Length: 355
Image 1: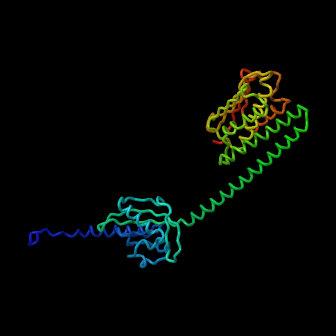
Image 2 (image 1 turned 90 degrees about the vertical axis):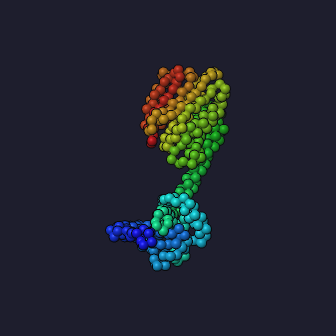
Image 3 (image 1 turned 90 degrees about the horizontal axis):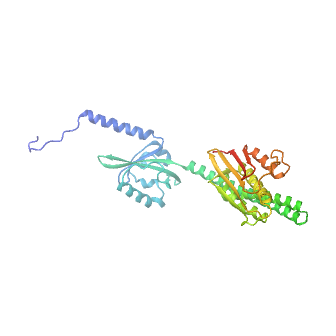
């Protein structure tokens, strides 16, 4: 007690002071050796500590930064925004990871600007809350992103050009087949040319579906079938009220190398059903189903309740081009093909696709 009756505040023991000094030295050592630029500021944004990386990044000597406002390291055009951010931070202090605030810009001593990512960490001290900022120059990353975006845009333009050229070439082939069919009255020749037109149209629809999906690695096969089926019914002048066509597909996307043979298979089987399955005004239905059997297996079936497939029709050695194509395309898909000849007539294919 003092002579005035008041307790004197005892200084901390020497060992505690030494521990505090060692702790502060370790902290400064960690900040100095950090791979990022580190800047510690007071509540009024005055710079109190910087490391060597901050000197290198901003181009200032340490003596030029200490005691100055952090705003000197930001472009004039964003300083008011930075003040607002600082006020919001002190209203609700807490760690802000690097990259959590996009659109940050730094200003070097030579006046050049650079994009950066800024991480904030509040530190409670005897003198109030300090803020330790970790700063990363992302100029190289931005350049790489711009290069990648430019390459992607160029690729999209190239793919668009390829799509239009393929589409135009297929349309030319269709037109030539149509002109050829208009110059003959031979029904068998007209039928052959019409079937060839439908095959070309099927491939064109796949490319169109692929292009409109904006995903050049896979085709929305359900969307393709929704377009193909009515087109085939129309090309064979079949009354939709007499022969209906049902398409049942789960959300199923196929890679282009599987979509084209699948599309041609469906084209051939629907065409055969429309031509031979419902003679003499017979009514009925054609069904197309597509679903994933597993992550890397797809099941597709085309069936109809028409007159059925004759027993003397040998699928492996068929003399008709349509069934020959179906067999060849199934082999191309590495598909297991099962056929039911009647009640209903069903062609079922199970084949692998990338998961």
